[in-house]
Length: 112
Image (cartoon, rainbow, N blue to C red; front, side, top):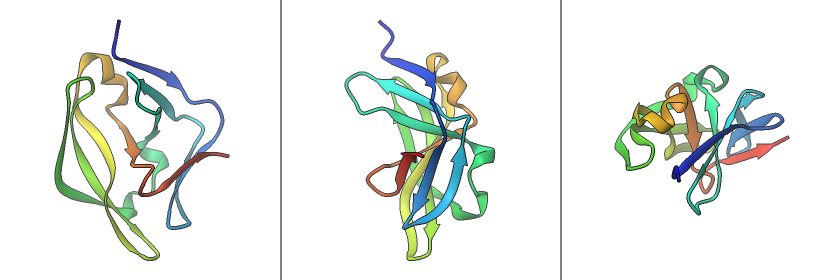
């Protein structure tokens, strides 16, 4: 069985950093990976690029591939390594290539 499954995320999804909306999308994707909580991936064009700063941290995942982290600026300051994207996805995760996901313990990702 494939360790990851990707579905269109139903409805409108937002991501907020310390209360400030940094993205909203009706074209988000939902990643289900093994027994982990689902993750919402936002199209890059639906996220305010001005709030993202590249991080030195690299993402390495057997199921999804390799990627990069981003710091997110917010009204209260920089939130380190709060977002990430896949720059070299596996074949199973290829449709996530031009999307961004966020660490839900650092920012708020919710369906509205």
